[in-house]
Amino acid sequence: MAKSAKTEKKKAAAVEGALNPELQQLIERLPLWKRPGYLIRRLHQVHYALFFEECQEFGITPVQYGLLTILSGNPDSDQISLAQALGIDRTNVADVLTRLAQRGLVERTRSIEDKRMVLARLAPEGEKLVAAMHPAMSRAQERLLDTLGEREREAFLATLLKLLEANNKYGRAALATSKFGD
Amino acid sequence: MAKSAKTEKKKAAAVEGALNPELQQLIERLPLWKRPGYLIRRLHQVHYALFFEECQEFGITPVQYGLLTILSGNPDSDQISLAQALGIDRTNVADVLTRLAQRGLVERTRSIEDKRMVLARLAPEGEKLVAAMHPAMSRAQERLLDTLGEREREAFLATLLKLLEANNKYGRAALATSKFGD
DNA sequence: CAATATTACTCAGTATACCGCCTTTTATTG
DNA sequence: CAATAAAAGGCGGTATACTGAGTAATATTG
Image (cartoon, rainbow over all chains, first blue to last red; front, top):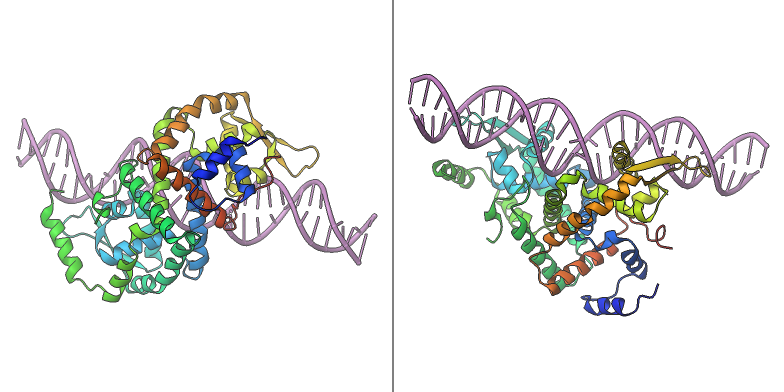
């Protein structure tokens, strides 16, 4: 195929550096590679893989660690608050909490003031794990953006936040808005 | 929101509670909204929500549409090739194909040359659906990046591609660069 | 203060997404 | 050409992630 003027233009617009020619071909031929939703799904999977590689020994998933993180700063939170803070569905929070409780990392109690609520807090084991795992989790985050320069990394993160703020209203897992901006 | 007294109590508990100060420092150094993996997971969810909103009437998920897209350009592909093209696990491809076949959108046959392989292709119904759904899918993609200006959007997509290229090796769902194309 | 609405949660069901183990078929090799 | 390795897929299991229906407790209201 003659990829004349169009490709030239695209390359000129690209930020820094040229892409692998094989990947460039994929983009040209598989329409999937022009869909941002697809690219984001793939990057999400890559992060999972990196996270697992770094955190293998702990047997904790990204979502589980996120939940533990929130609990470490907000003990005795109810499930809906946790869901809003994490940006996942409330039924999902219950599932994750069940698994974490089975491993003795969190403790759940019925609230006395409001008997509908189930409050969760870190067990001592959980606190230890959050601290012990933090470096590995941190490495996974760093490795994900490793290839980016300082400027590109910051621009990328800024754009991610911008997109999330603009689209926060979608889905049952909308975040509590106060999480952004402060 | 009207339960300000309770919220106050919760905050007070968080402050007075037996919070490990070292743990707090650790968590505050890399809070959720500064973890790229977390932000990408959230954006992934947002895209799903947008996709469902636009494509509700068709009852097709992003992954299903991705698979149909590949099949429309590459009839009679085997499951492993499809997995590599889509960037998902091969067992997952089998699951998705089963659901699509149940709805009469794809057809599966055993290859004659290699009896191990299951080849998939679009049924006429599937071809119709791919065409009919395309505008809605496109709208979901556009809405996701709607708030970005032209330059920021291109920079974002370029960075996404760069990150995928750099991290291609991770996970069972590593993409193939050779199967499709020529 | 009883009827009603809302809230927090549970449960069942669907759809990704992955791993490890196994069988069948094909390819390789001594 | 038989023994073995490799490839393709099936199957069972785990962990998100969400929808919709239903239950118990609390809040609101006529």
